[in-house]
Amino acid sequence: MLQKTTKVFDVIIIGAGPSGLSCAEALGNSGLSVLILEKNNTIGPKVCAGGLTVKDIKQFNIPEELIEYRFNAPYLHVNNLHKAVKTPYNFIYTIDRHKFSQWQLSKLNACKNILVKPNSKVTKITNQAVLVNDETIGYKYLIGCDGSNSVVKNYLGIKPESTGTGIQYLIPTDKYRDIEFFFEPKYFSAMYAWIFPHKGYVSIGCCCNNKDLPASILRKNFEKWLSEKKIDVSNGKFEAFAMNYTYQGYQFDNVFLGGDAAGLLFDFSGEGIYQAIISGQEIARHILNKNYKSAAIENLLKTKHRHSKLLNEIMKAGNKKILYFYVGFWLSYFSQFKRKAINILT
Image (cartoon, rainbow, N blue to C red; front, top):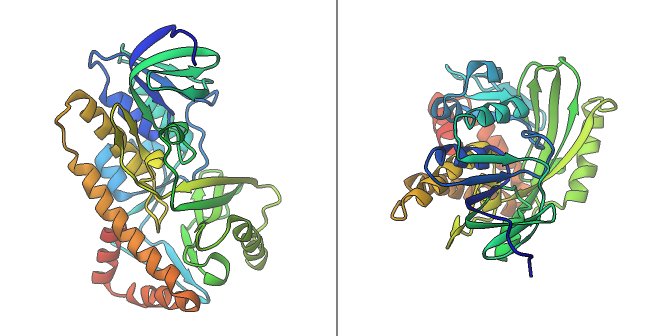
């Protein structure tokens, strides 16, 4: 039993990442009282490679000053084959996640109905209230935007059927100028490693589906790969993060899940920022209009299904995984295929 509630909010959002902040923005000045609880001391830090695609830039009107680098020719490596996949337009970008979150946060300044509380870790949830920092706060709607290890998801009893692991080093260097993807099944099985340049540092990492490759083996393989590529990580910061691919819905009566908490990560690319923002916006619209039907979520799920189907096919290929990557490599010479692949995967 929780102690008597000290205050009741119409909406409590757990997690001040892209999903939680976009949800709050959509609820801004709505007349509903909104509380955002963020466990970290500051808004913005999250383990993430910091990549966006062209649809993010177009749809969310992201300011130019938040974009670090733009790429129209990412490098594709399949074992010993290498090429720049050139396109007539930029379609991959890197951003600073902290600055991005601060920009989102700044848009809430004019919303008098929204209270943001950092350093507020939720330790217990009931069907009417949450316990945070020994204070019991009531809610009418609860929204979990708190990542793959969501406390709200756990409260709902949702057990992810498909999970993944991402690991990376953040290395202080301006040595790298190209965005690169490495498909080498002997190290990363059905997924890949990446190099994402940022201003003043680079993210070099990899990811896997845990059904396909256990996280402990991925870490060992990654270290071998780094050594083989002669990549010095001695001054780098190591980070690891969970990836939740299991989508089982985003609404559960008066409780909602957004972004990674809802399992909306795209299975093959690992992309998550776009889905986080869209799902946050759509949850808000549903709260404001009980009869709202989300076409945007349906479109996300269609793309997610394509990713899931592709990844499952590669995973089932066993020792022949590399054939999928070779085929993709050679087809990337054809403009029509490049356009189709970009549209399908983004």
